[in-house]
Image 1 (cartoon, one colour):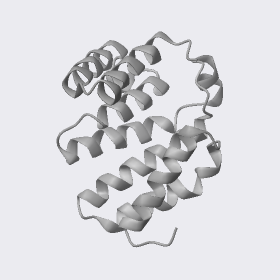
Image 2 (cartoon, helix red, strand yellow; image 1 turned 180 degrees about the vertical axis):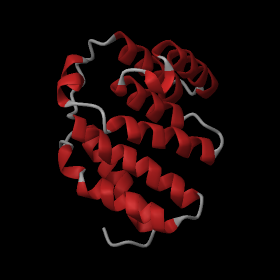
Image 3 (cartoon, helix red, strand yellow; image 1 turned 180 degrees about the horizontal axis):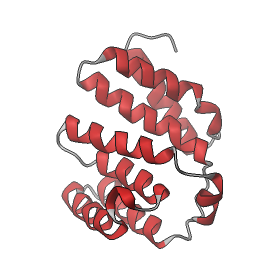
Image 4 (cartoon, helix red, strand yellow; image 1 turned 90 degrees about the vertical axis):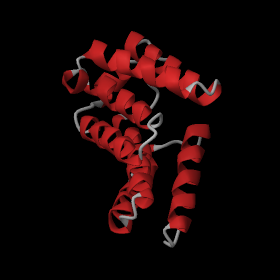
Length: 154
């Protein structure tokens, strides 16, 4: 369970989007949190998770990709110590499979299959950082589906 107030607020936005179907409300909340944390100058963990969540509520794939790339860049600054302080159950390395999966999916939608395959391979290379729990299975399933869409061996 997260002990970080900003992560809790981000979770509320994710809940609005994924469980209540309130995409616009989630986007509004994420925008407010983005301003509150100081945008890209904020805590890298907050920037990473918030940008990753913000990407999911975009209507335009170019905007989705921009947010996912922000999240990926911020992940490079996140440490296991910081993740632990926030009460997040993943390691810092556990952030990457989902981030690369989403970036890959954006590039696939945009028709840039070379970059899509690049990020798919990066996600697959880091999949060992995930457990065999529901979240790990969700990401592994997404990678398998994307690989099939790209015509790559799984």
